[in-house]
Length: 301
Image 1 (cartoon, rainbow, N blue to C red):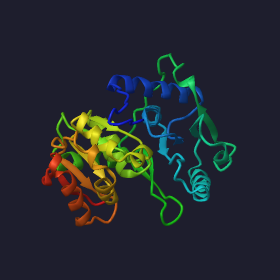
Image 2: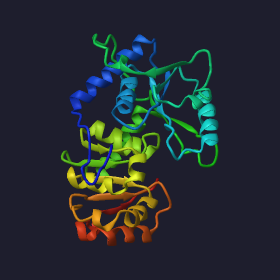
Image 3: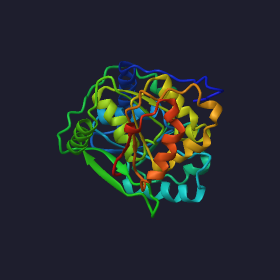
Image 4: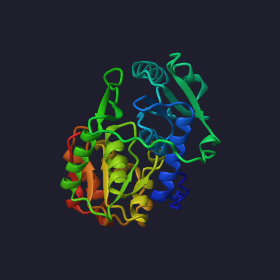
């Protein structure tokens, strides 16, 4: 997204449009021979194609995992080590990148002879035939792989069965008293568990609306997150601890006057050591713009 002044540019997809695109991905995977229960790695920029590609993989019964797409902040050497090690460990049947994936990193993708490396282009939109197979997974079958952040070494993958994911979502729905009119706003990366589970799989399963931007866009313009929450009257969000201080200190005061954060009923501090001071600074900065103290919540992550 590009955010000149407060004129946010965005793209709206209906649930039906999203499922249609996911089915096009599923058809594409089938045409390339991807089998049920085969691992598939997605290395794509955060956005609708990544999300639809993930769901499309599950539609055919494959086991998707999302890895980080390189950005302007990436440590090239660390990224290369991680890319090489993780893709080798997974032993994926297919690895999907986009046409803009940097050439200097492509040689670090697993070169296993059984792995097909696919660069996405217009071929997804060309898929028009009906799907021949819809997967019918059992509760104990693996839904997808979720990787750790890799801060202390090579990322560790965890295989999450459908039953486990749905149980977690049921607990979240109960704890948050999720309502049909809830709207989630998030910039959290989908290769991390909080972004993937709470901010993508949860709204997907519960048919909630989600307003999503990329982490890079948020870092460049942290106020954009708050303006999106205002524009779309969002109610739920998850943030790491550092984001509370970052938005309190890096959003110019003149950018705050059009904010109305009164719709937010849960802004959840999670995934890092939680500091009361960070939340207090955030509350002091945005309570004049409708933020409720009761909305500031915490979660173990």
